[in-house]
Length: 472
Image 1 (cartoon, helix red, strand yellow):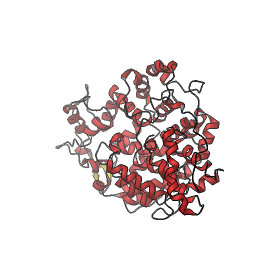
Image 2 (image 1 turned 45 degrees about the horizontal axis):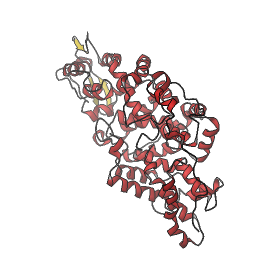
Image 3 (image 1 turned 90 degrees about the horizontal axis):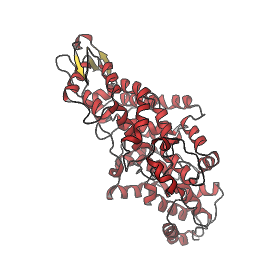
Image 4 (image 1 turned 60 degrees about the vertical axis):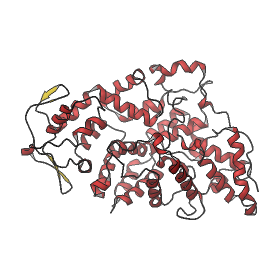
């Protein structure tokens, strides 16, 4: 039995820039206004898939169809503020008692698959890279668990509160070598990344600013995995940081760096790369209104909502302008196929692909972008996809594209390929590639005695190893 495609996919509007839209893309007022579908920019399956790639870890068929029916704004409402009992879900997963960071990796992946609030997990993953802390240095799984739980609790709330909390996080201070900060020997190991990575960005502070900030944080220690403040070890003398003078403490430093225009600009740039486009950075004029608004309250949810609702997000400037991280690639296979797999195995496979959860490589986290893709990682992505889709092996038979296709009414050699292309790529595939895909499954089809299960697995594997599937 040979798999065929019964009809070509709908024309992909998301790649087309209508002449009337081109001039507006650089206008901040239009770019950040809420997207409203019209004849020039219709709401399509591709747009729904785009939203679920960025604000979640992909979508199953029912979610895509519901999104088509709901439209972009109502779909985003559900992603931003889901009606499910998030607190009950969090209690179940926050009470997990772990003995190692490796088991935490598996637990977090399971959470990503099952969460009723995928945007929260997606943003937690973002902050895990922003406030990168490597468990190999911390050597305490409990502290790592507490840190990620803290990041999750603030991932869509106040960056001000998050930054203050991370300045007193034992795992962060141990990782940076800042677990002891004495008056006689101020430790710069937290002050420097605070300014360079967490707030201002390179070139927006001096060495003197770092030194004075380090003095402000004196008195804080991590002793027996507990944060302690020893008043006699705090330097209470006058300090000057970023043009301000005073007998500053660490909390004052947090306040001062957040008052700088460069901090909001740096964070908005970074979130723009995460949510909208990593191939081209925005110009200063485009992000100026977002940075100005963000600097007032550092409300992460409000900023993310502005970006995800915008005309710019639903334009070719954002569409397929990010390379999927290993986590996004793998869960982009798991979520559409409605299965729950061995996340212990998956955690190790993702580490082999370069994204080892709880073990970001440097204080700057994962570089991302093109760094995810090379000849070795492409082979490993190919092999991981094959393992996920096999009917045996480490992932068992938990993901079965043939079963999912039949569940949604596509049980013929003609309808199944079309369904899988829409499921994984929302129909967005070049005609010549679409026409070539059935040949990949044809070789195996004859040996299956008319059973479509194995050809469908091979066809699904061919789709998820296409270049198009590597993009979000």
